[in-house]
Length: 344
Ligand code: GTP
Ligand code: NA
Ligand code: MG
Image 1 (cartoon, rainbow, N blue to C red):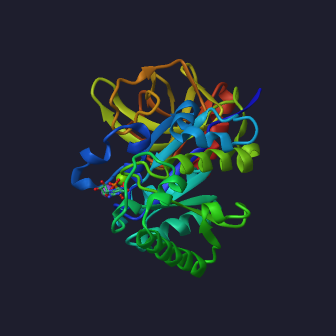
Image 2: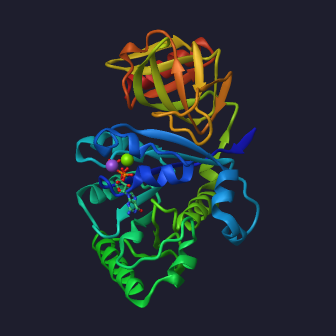
Image 3: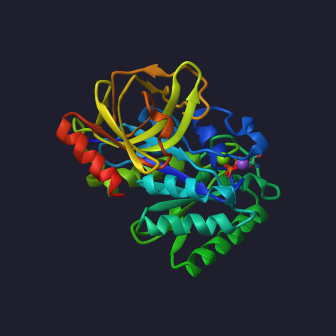
């Protein structure tokens, strides 16, 4: 049976431009506040149910024409520090759609450009969040307000300053070959890059950002997101981690099929393919961050794409972050998965 899976939405951008803060605002968490040095050093994953999207979007959801079919959004948080190019590339390559965050006061920075290049290379569609608008001089903050409501309350000078900063961004995008525009001035979302001014810290513009992410995913990616849910799972390892009482585990993004507890999995390791049986499937609660959970994970018997899941199994010590995870339900499927992994 085919169904529409949740899209994988990667958040990319230069260090400290506000990626984790945006996800914190959506989750009502404080992951960014607990990071060593305020720097993200791992890839994260969080499931946002469609009900949460509707709640945060508020009355804006009425702009949605037609039926909402998406079950939710799976967000991937990536580090912006220059040292973590490979983690950004991993997050970028998993994404169905990306949000590029740019601090509107700092403009383009080296990892902004690097992120765009990753997205371009993977042909990943993206939208732009122009963040930290609350820092514009004299800006009046109304928490969680849609941008188009909030902007009307700003005085002429603040509006003009935002406009100037957006034009600077639009100019930079143009130099890189993109036609960008403020989202409410975009005529054709397949040809123009939409910029949504936001304040991740105060939630301004987050309603529009979420409606655009969900709306564009469903409208333009529906065919890609339609999967054979019952098929064997395929995924990518985000991290290999030691967990007290569980031994070595892998945090995995499942992007296709269904992973069942009694499946054999074939996992990429250093110069080899590891074949093992699942001991436990541990699923973070909705709105929880897999790399910094607030709650205990749920033990589940199966998990359908797209999802972030922690897998405990023997022999994962040599698993390699970034490698594939392929579920196999017969000897033949195991052999095929091994060949595929070793051929890479
Ligand atoms: P890395 O993951 O390390 O690349 O950083 P990041 O992009 O996740 O940025 P992070 O969320 O850690 O935010 C960096 C700093 O900017 C923190 O002090 C945040 O509180 C602050 N910040 C983020 N968004 C906003 C915003 O909209 N307004 C203001 N005023 N500060 C913000
Ligand atoms: Na940071
Ligand atoms: Mg971060």
